[in-house]
Image (cartoon, rainbow, N blue to C red):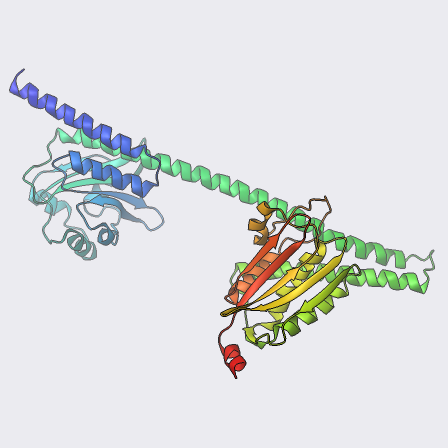
Length: 434
């Protein structure tokens, strides 16, 4: 074998090794930036002329080329760079859609002459020197007619240079990288489509549920009022009073549902306002219990707070809403009645209010999503529980806005305990000490 044939065999072997290493890296399961960084690291370790390298991707929203992965640079600094269309080597190779090999320093300086001063300063900081590369090989990242960016390889200090025979192998590497980018984007688009479809299904289910739940009290109000307006029936005063009480109760129910929907919307747009002041939670709990007691004849609501329970900083209207929502949940999920206990507990850094019922309980798998919007616990007895699925999520948002937390403990058939904590701090702590 002649010397030239031996060198050619070595070159071919090296190229196959580079392709193999980069291909294996790009097929690994990982996010795109990690894949590209690993691919460039492989390329740098086996492709001798490459002293510097970067993958510059076109950011359509910003109208700039951004570095996503690099070697030989300080990538954290290089990320400050944003090249405009047609700017420097990257912009010109992208526009041309063809590889560019620059073997002389004056060629490199010429093609980089239009780089904006801010980008040139970033490049110098990322390299640790003002010196320009003296040898550059840049190839477009392209799949079919769709371009995503440019792979740029450079030499700065090494004596070795890129040659014409290096262009095909680097172009093949660029094609592999472009395929990986295209695959990742297709996966992201598919996932976005699936997420959008799932969101649409959820939105449809939510609207159907809310429509059904809102229609139920409206249908009851319409039915009772229509019955009272019938000319052919003379209702006794006792029955008319019963109808009016039922209409009043359904109006309260409807008002509560609409309030939950409005509160949820305020939370979503960050418009829920908390106005804390020193309050006595036992008084708020007692008021909420008395209001809720009027809605049920089969439950007994009891408030149990220690006499030395401290004052806390809280928005009284919002915290009363939290207690009311939790009590409403306790009553709904104990359809056969029973005792509902509202207790207060003092801890070193906070206070805890708990509401315990003797209802049907909640399965362990339902405790985690319990405070998510529109989640409805399925009753193990098949009993339909009315509501919007927003009461507890709204309660969680209010408690967390106060710096507290909310949680649930339950066992099927043995009832549920819902708890929330509020910190002991601020003006209330000073008042308590006094």
